[in-house]
Image (cartoon, rainbow, N blue to C red; front, top):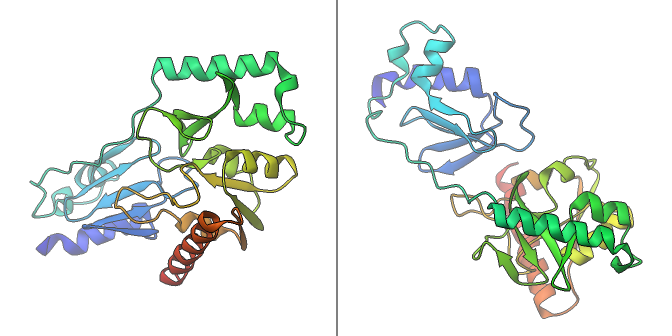
Length: 259
């Protein structure tokens, strides 16, 4: 990066603000300045002079930003290594038309057979979360942040196959929570029950032994530190105990690493 380091540091600080996460490999994550970003979504690679927001989809180079913001001598914001092409990690696929149709059909079926909803689930919660009933099983829609990408049918049948560990419900729903107490449940059914009882709940979609990871392969838990108290509500068996200890240790490490 050499002679241009000062200028690159300056424009990144001016436009993107405080670093929220070091992604490794020269990439830093920020709150995106180009949309109302509640969960840090914008990656900047200073060594390559490029940036991309995974939430709003905007991307570009620091050189272009310098020109748009009328910085003098925009070429100073091109790193010496700018010839290296920035290839972003592939995003998970968005939901296909067939997946969307299945979700919609399942939701309509459940609305037409409202008596199938368990007594401990509030009907308005079930509808707001987009829960459906399909092939005599509960259907839970999956999101990346707030973008629909697929669903889980029952406990294990996922569309598309190989879906990674995600957070349920969507970030649109979670962002309505206050920052006092968050409950992490063992599965979608328990999570829906908790929310129906008035608790602020989430779950991880691939079981008690799984924790969501970012594209750098590290646990994606930093956003959870917004809550003053986190209660892990896993099953009282070996899988639940092991999973709760693993999650507690991962959360503690993230908290310590980030002050």
